[in-house]
Image (cartoon, rainbow, N blue to C red):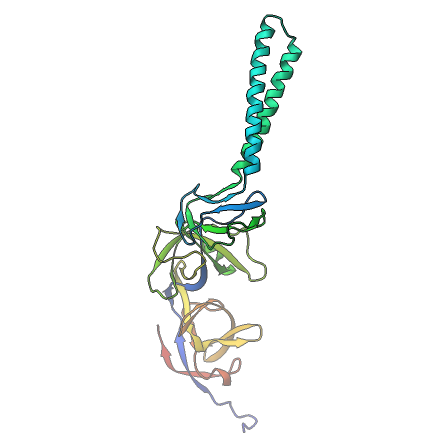
Length: 323
């Protein structure tokens, strides 16, 4: 027990002299591979399937017929309108000749012309509806699983199959808000997929309009270089991000940092005493941590006996480590 008037015993500690050093920060974040084009295929009208030509998992080109819907009634209406249009055109031509010799009024001629135009418009509508009975691939891609069978009655809500473009893959990933300013269009990133050590490259070309409120993360989209084999849309990827290096980072040993309820502190040796300083930390590795505020180059940081020290206590530094 310390007696009144006696000097406190001097603490013996180890120290570390802070120097600036070159530090490059990198993080790993999860990502998802995304097809450049991907969609479910629906019919535009409600009708019964009379032909189904889907080969599951097959690659198809744009315009390939995937299914055919019943159209006998539409074909019958088209034949009827084609006959009516032929007769209406003949009548219109005949009235045109009569108009030239004064054998018919212009009003009668325009009436027959209007009738022919109306029949042609009705025929165009029928042809459009017939075209809707043929379901085609909207772009080059790989078909998914078949969701219907021949003879099924389908509606515009029915999913017949899906298709994904397998070239021009993209990768989506998110980064914490603090790194958002360092992700620019044109930045190259590297990633690999589960079960493989192969390294793939992608180039950032778009970012979300803002930071996600719940997670405080920014979503990034990058375009995969080339068309590498083995990548599947929807697959998981591990994205490796390296940020601009800091040539003047102040690094201290991890054990020198004292966690507090509302921040972190560090003890600096100065004039034979222990001085407590609030600090802000940044990048860390297994042994060192960056201090971005509260410390300067050349300071001697105490690394041992931290729990027994109090502000302004006398200390003696036994061992000093320089980086």
